[in-house]
Each structure stands twice: as structure tokens, then as C-alpha cells.
Length: 107
View (cartoon, rainbow, N blue to C red):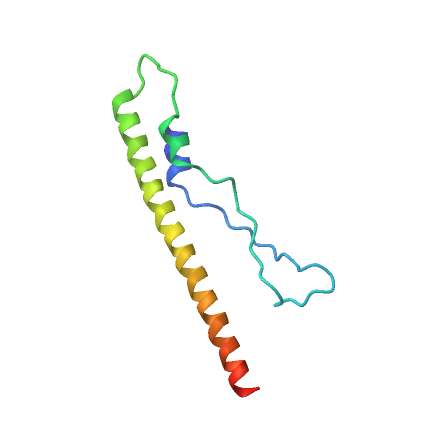
């Protein structure tokens, strides 16, 4: 259980190396996304997680209640992230349209 709690509450390690762009592409050219630090965990993985029972172990009801709490929090965070991504895309499209309109106006 201590290992599980450590995994849940520990911060992800950040990689300290610089990823160079492919040859022929400028350092700041194009869109670059960093690779994920580790595989993402989904709420269903938390909800469906089962532990072996031991005689002196923790109360399974408390463990599963906590897992459901974490899963609900993950669900809310993923929903917020999706909404943020949608808003980001909407703003980028609006900016491109505005820039195109400005270019046509002064051309």
C-alpha cells in the first residue's frame, strides 16, 4: 500500500535533456510537443485496480473508496484538459483568421 500511495502522490520526474529538432528544421520552427514522461493513467484503471488481501492488511473498503476518489479526480482533470484543448484550438483558429484578414488588408 505504501508503494501505491508513493506512486499516486509522487511528482513525475522531469527529463533534463534537450530534444533537438530534426536536421534542416530551425530550432523554433513548427509545432513541437514533448513526448509524454510516462504512460497516462485512466480513471478506469484506477477504479478497476484490485489488491490481494492479507490478514493484517488495510481495510479494502477504504482502499477502494480512495481509488474511486482518485478516479473521480482524474475524470474531472481530463474533462478540464479537454475543454482547455478545445478552447486553445478555437483561439488558434481565430488568431489565424485575424492574421489572414490583416495580411489581406495591407497587401
